[in-house]
Length: 182
Image 1 (spheres, rainbow, N blue to C red):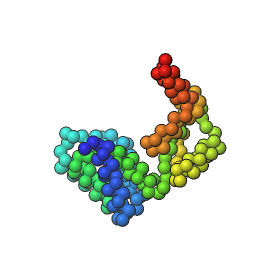
Image 2: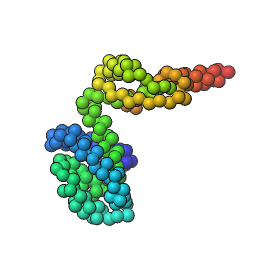
Image 3: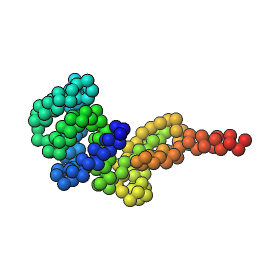
Image 4: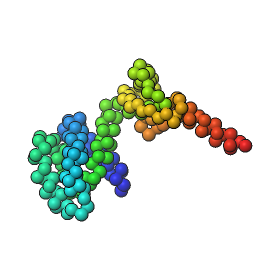
């Protein structure tokens, strides 16, 4: 099983359990804090993900570390110990991303990424947000980006679907069409 597939399964199971046994948003914050802890303490992070360190030592490290992290939800504690036992702490960041996506889906929120050739004014972002909310029937959280290579127009990504509306994209399609007809 690939890391991505494993992360998706862990995230799905975690959300199911956290809905009944804990606060799903609280679990998300706790996981994010632990990912940040591993990133801010590189020696700790390397120790927990290094395949050369025996699983028993990783479990012992996790067992010693968890009480120092404060009042974590039992589901979060169980997940972290389980990941240490299965030598899967390296995919914790992917699990967190997948968990966040599922949590947003549960709340009826969808992420959209809009890339344009120049920075969009806030009122234009608000208008695009409203249009996307009407089209999807969900609340939309927009992240904007700038790529001067687009020349104009925009590229919108909602989930895994990409809507290519840039001038560079149109020119590329025209060029391909002209070359195929020649």
